[in-house]
Image (tube, rainbow, N blue to C red):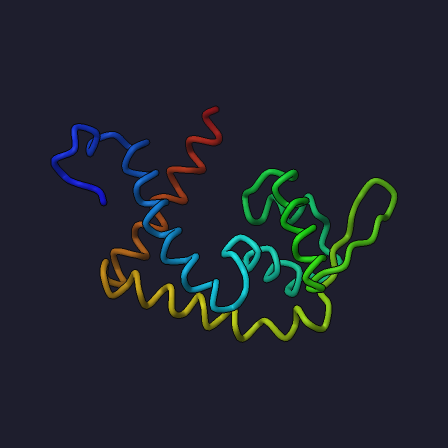
Length: 144
């Protein structure tokens, strides 16, 4: 549990990782009810929204390394939620009927996650944190 008296509380690295652990714990709990990890849910939402999306496009959209996407797609394919087809050097990903049936469970999990952190942080603070973290992450990525 983060402590404002920690000698590291003013370190962005420490604070960001503590926040990531806290929100990940909440997200894992909510998405477990849908039988998915939060990362699998993001990927699945991208595939359902854009059938035939390229694996590289998924990686850019969810901001993960291609190797991570491949591992997640392996699991989603094993669960009969996606199919993949090779087109030359690219891989296209398609949702299965089972994936389409998970949409409501995913939306419900996102809603419960949002409610949980909003009840603690407040809606405005949660939205502000998301914007600030997205902006800072982008700036750090562009600078490196």
